[in-house]
Image (tube, rainbow, N blue to C red):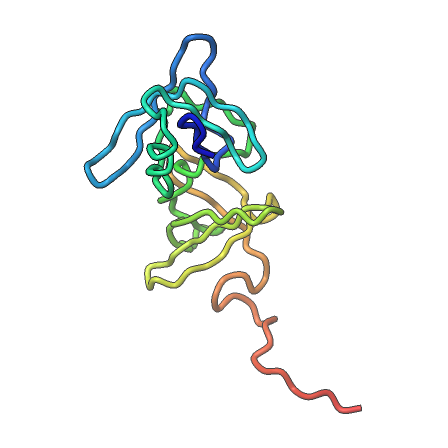
Length: 171
């Protein structure tokens, strides 16, 4: 993209301004956060095609590649039940339904079928938790807590169902 300063944002949650309204966004860069005003946003195959008031040249748009964009929360669109913005999840304390700590949610991987939450325990080991209703039992962004009901063998040291070695099969 980049034509006329338009650029692709891999997101479907940035709001499209209506009429003459603008939506502020902030780009984190080496000199600190830079404010840009979104004047239009339209869905395309891989995300949103954004136009901003101060980005008018392809070179300016190209300079934004790989940056993180933040939009003030009051401009974000409301989400359906059981749908959360990534920033609401990162940093959450994750525990089992019985109250055992699992770790801190540090990343969200988008896999296509369902998201996978990366949870790091106190020893630095990462666990991969599928974002499916049978596993994720509650999410409380205000309290910063997620409760999970892990499948057998999902967490390290959990269950005895994982094979420790493969043996040859005799015929």
